[in-house]
Length: 202
Ligand SMILES: Cc1cc2nc3c(=O)[nH]c(=O)nc-3n(C[C@H](O)[C@H](O)[C@H](O)COP(=O)(O)O)c2cc1C
Image (cartoon, rainbow, N blue to C red; front, side, top):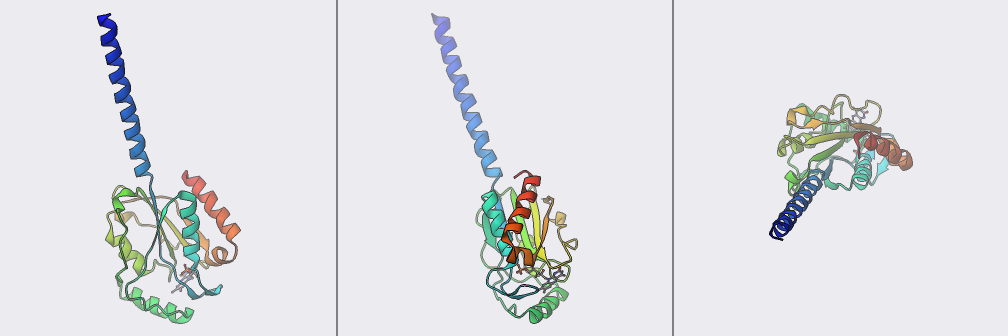
């Protein structure tokens, strides 16, 4: 009888400890799988799509966020002097790059440490990332995290812009998609994003 009581108490403890550990580890996994989709994108006149009210990259960012259940963060500059006309914008962006500026960005990602995977999206500008994206990369600690780059462009593809290893993050396979596809053919954009995410295990 005494033995049975001791055994029952022992089993009860074992069940409580096992369940507790399992819940704890599931909780941790959930936390570490949180996704952030940070993006920079412009409206106004853009190459090959005319005057747009939703940026090409923004469209892709929203598709990714919806499919990964991720949180969106728009990288916006504090003093937004980017021209709305395409040619003027190209000239402005060129000067900003030549000066290697780090334009101040608005707001912060809340609880950045909760995100294990950060998608970072931008339009390719002069074969590079727009300077506000560099500001964003300089602003957070990416060590131990996954960065997943994505870009929109009109022919150059990533142009090597996806290499963000200097941040200390592991950089996963990115997606480069034509801006006009994102803007004018959302079914195709959706398909490309889905296939890519599937390849990444999402
Ligand atoms: C300043 C500037 C520079 C650009 N440079 C390139 C380039 O080097 N290669 C390319 O393929 N497209 C280039 N483009 C086209 C954009 O990458 C493309 O239109 C993009 O989809 C715009 O995205 P957004 O609407 O999210 O800003 C450039 C556009 C601008 C405004």
